[in-house]
Image (cartoon, rainbow, N blue to C red):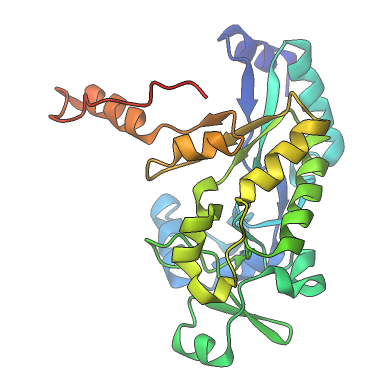
Length: 275
């Protein structure tokens, strides 16, 4: 990217830039998406002359937390971070804690990290489960929507996974200055338990993020954790260590104000406490 483009970002006064979709895309995820009628319909609505080669993969179907070669690989990412740092701007990247690509190494090396299914589950709900080697694994999902067909659901209650996540986030911290954690509230104990029930196993005494973030902060005290959060979970996530959370209510009010007169009931109290 030309220096002038970096300059323009800094000139706006931003102190951080979030680059979405940096990580290595998944060939397995691309193949699934290119066979999925619902996704193909979405692609064609956005790009009427869509061809399968146009699909470079979902940024949230991560195979490895290594910069994709399509974007310059690790060297390109390092160069971008240095350019931003020269201008006093921090680099924020994604971390997707809820799920990984079907060809992520954990799928073969650590199948115990995932929510398990059965042949019966696969037969009854083929859009919600994937066969990986000899196992059936649940697809990732938000409890209010159908499963995402191209990703595997991690088990937030598994202690081995939590340690592996700490290691993964440490490796990411060497590549950027903070992470935006996708759908962070899905990993909270009460939400994960309601979503997956007995399939998740025994609910841990400690929250997922309370195990991940403080451990990271001891080694990287200035590393930023930002939560994509909904359902009024911001306060709880901040207590578990997040520096910043999405404020969906504020966002909705801003959108409403741009569209017309403030909607009734949208001026209610918001969190005023400090952590």
